[in-house]
Image (cartoon, one colour):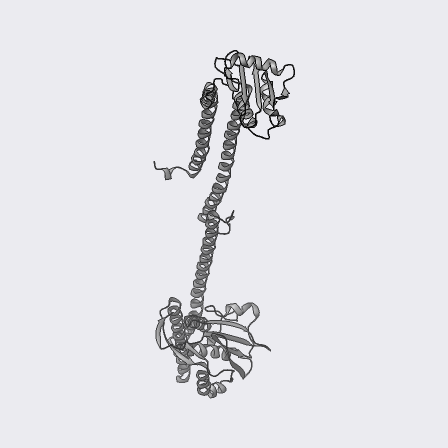
Length: 499
């Protein structure tokens, strides 16, 4: 088994255990070395001090005081008060002292005399001016400074000195106890902090992973509405955020798929309905001819005319359906070219104005900029314009109607609005008029008003041209279809593209 095959929780626990175990072992080793060093420091300490001072005797404080008295006696401005501290150190050890300046006694330890000290020192020291004698019975010290003439005398017994090994004092035991407390506290702190950090990291890592696992299970069951909480702004937070984005994209894709399936069902239902009506007409008139109902040539001619018109309706429906399917599948090529849009509509209105006027529709053209150029496919865009105008003719109110074509240039696009003044469409139906087979009449029985694919085909063409199409209500009543197309670039040229 490889390390990456072990569960993440166990790996985190092991890593945190090592994070605690290693510092604890190091602290134990350091504490053991320090305490062992203190236990072995008794005789070694005395030997080291003795090696630093060649004079006989282990008492460093006495030796230091004697050396200090020599140095202070050599000063020409020496006074007894400068030597007070050193004299006090010697007297605490039972050594009697005296200081003589210019032949006069300046200081003598209470309870003794200068003559007594001189007698003791003369008995042990051969040199009367400067000498130091220190043995098991006591110490005798005499020093006369050649610089200042000051004489320092010291003599006494040293009952505290021992020739055996030095015994450990209470300070050493206190230091050992403090070391034990420090090491123990450090170990306890490392363990507590390790446990806290381990629990904290486990909670911060494993809980988001648990949420991700639960969300994955919900997605597997088909529930795409349960978001994953984002615990932080770190890598785990980014992962949860990306997971939520993926969930939303999956939900959007599912909704689009469901909408597409619903659209296909409506498409099939629309085809069935719109083909059923002309087929019924063909069947009925054909049956009348076969059964001899149409006995006169005039009646037979009328029956044949109805059959022909029904067949033309079905042919137009099939052609529109075939075009819509090809547009939806992206199989219609677009031949793009730069077109001055105002001139395009000038030519269109001049060409179709009289014919539309005879059908009861008057066109007006309005534009604030005649130099706007867009990139489009002339043939496919003409189909869009014809569908919009034809839609206004079918649903006009009264014998005549008016349509205003308004061209409004924007920053990098142009909007073309077709505003008629017919009966219009209610607000709740505006977003449906571009759906396939949608008609504003709920009965859907009047197939003479078209297949219901005209505006759906127009939407697919405009999307293929890189534009947008929308519907709104005309002020004062009627329907406005607005098309937004991007302006052509300066270096644009004729190209072929697929939708």
